[in-house]
Length: 530
Image (cartoon, rainbow, N blue to C red; front, side, top):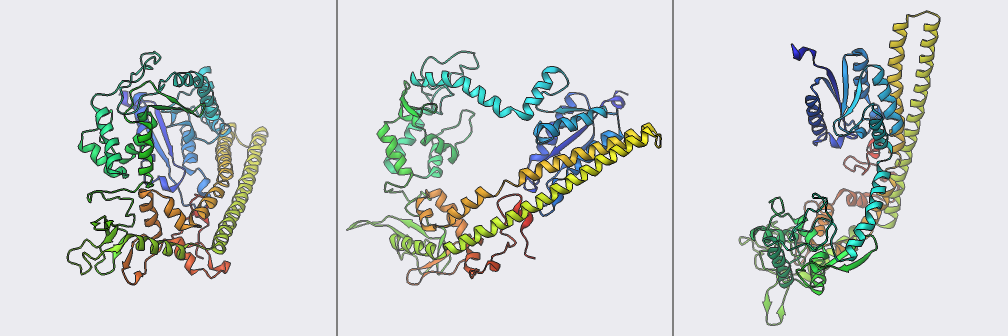
């Protein structure tokens, strides 16, 4: 019997674009909201999922599911007690919209709840709700300002005011409501392993995060939670000057000598940074795959068998030499060396040949900006349509009031029709606000894109080994063959470079193609081959 009288709740979850639908965002929101309902003893009456729609349709800003959810509350007035969202920012994008829809729901006897935030009708809850919707950034800035002076003073005393880096024991002073007064002590288990990593990197000149993480895991290094060490963690360790006895003060921009026990000297730390940037010649054992001396390994392939080339530093009478070679023992090119210098020189020439010229880059930027302006015009038109719709709805609401006053319709029917109009007005207002937000997305992306592709040889030279590999996949997604005598073969280029080769300098040649998706959500709606 108790199950039959459980209060009812609506769950509303939303993502802002279709890219997020295939991920976990909607499912995560739904799961957390269900937990919140169960905790409060509410029965889930219905779930509304505002999934991303195609950006080619201007109706993407219409909150169809929100409108359906509000209609459900209206039709089940005083039966649905709670309208549950994960966070306030999943509900509306600004304070005005938030409280407008909240008022409508309240009139239906439905209260808005956040599964993760304290909002409600009590005075303190109203204050929190308002601040969460409009002033969270300001609050964070105030808190940061209040703590800056204290932390800066600790740093100047040689003490690290935050949780200590891996390899040192964290005192958990904050949990005990104490302030740090002594330097962090070395972790007897992790300290020697990390120190060994630094020394190994220095002596064997290992720059690859992947290989260093392999060594760390082989030697038993784990995170504080007992998890394995990934390459990203190696990067955070080796870039932290704390291990060299230095604490950086972000509030003054100065470095301070710490009171903690250091693992390596500052000179050794600086030398390691040069090794990791590829500015010191590295001699890798053969087992190391991501050798900065051979960035083209795997991506450049043997012209005979198609196997990815590998690299080595054989020692001869004249010293140490650097060669690429085919490692396939069954290939006729096996054992025939390719000069590292010659291959790199030819690759630079290849990049120079496929680097878009200034005419193309100007044309590319012009076309994208044109598309952006066109999209902006479409958004302006959409905004005007929404505003016209709102004007019509307000007139309709006024007409209903007049009809009630003149007793042409009953009061109950009039109120019901007015409530429905209020829902539609609230949804239209959200659509207007989101149109204006979407108009600001593209300019920075265009500047970055043109800068990135304007000088491929320089871009390639400036990257570290890991980013070189990513860069090569971007330019040559399927790799490229190389013949010692004939040079590079024909390869499939990344889409933008392929378009560059096809363009003849005519603006009509450069049109949005299927697969050349703009980096912003808005421009996707403007890509068309029609």
